[in-house]
Image (cartoon, rainbow, N blue to C red; front, side, top):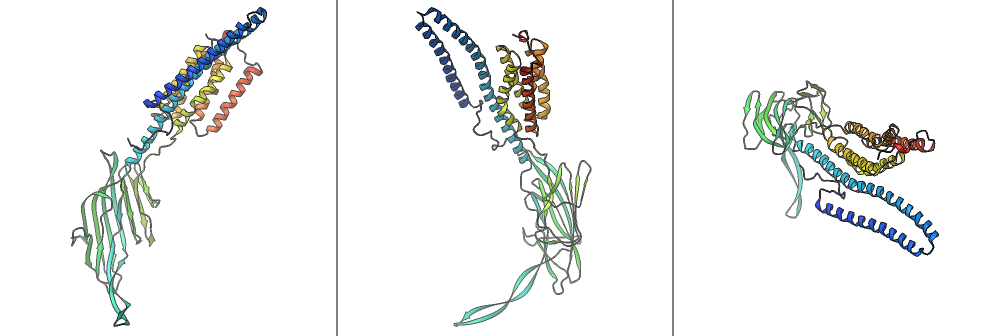
Length: 467
């Protein structure tokens, strides 16, 4: 796994021991503060009751009212505390899962990039070089006088290739230590040379080997069926004689291994009567550098790319074949969903409270089911489509939510609240049209609450509560 694949910076992760200790410390402080406030309120009521002990009627009225309110407050604080207990650890759970999923996505991208990393195999077009004597003049100073000197110097010129017929067969293998792809290139090229000069018959055929190869073997150059031998080691310039008006043919062959990309570079030359056939015996393969081939043939196991340039053409960019990896789309969707999940949980719990009577036990079970569904979605989305995964999980969530009501009416209310408050919002964060889906979820929530409370189209009774 690449070391460059990191989690989301600044996001708490409970898999880190230091952050886990810090979270426990802050949670303990908040719990102690809440307990202190509740006890302080009870003491305040007791003190007020003690101060009014001489006024019995007023004391009974005051104590009765505040005892009822204090009891209601304690019951409300129980539910509020439970929601906070579910929300705060749920947030840290979601942030941890978001970090893990982001780390997994980046590692996957790095792995795909590593599989096609490496220096490309670049084959340069050969050059036919010749030398001419060119006169030139310069001035110098002799005995205090300016003297003009006329001399000749040797300069290099190049003869354009009259034709190029190239075929390269590419096979792909895997470098086991680095898990990166390697090309095995079998190259054969016939180059036609015509001497169109009148007074030049000495030339050099310069055909360098491919650049970026990690292994080069069987490299040879033949002229009209006769193999040419280099005069100096590492020198790939081969002298030959060709009379004016005559033509000859050179064949270049080799087998090479290199990075997962093979390209042909004209090196600034004009291409004429050019034909390149690249056969990629693997899939998926595609043409490189944006120079579209004239013909593409595919039989499922291999793809043949053909470039043809009959007339003179100048091609600046190298062109050829590369391994086309499958695109990794929808990255960052699950981490974003997990970061917004606590807010969705709050909205869903609020809808449940406003839709049907909720007991302390039911709130705890519902919250546990919600975050368990998110945990399942996080790991199930690694193997199947996230939208399909949430569709399957939503069916289970709705089946379990049916048990929140003690009657059919209460159960239907729980189903509607769950669809509007949990299923649609999470699904909206998984699809491209998030804004539209979230708007529909919000509209459904508002319509349901209005129908439930304002217009009394859907009334529940006290016996609809499941204790």
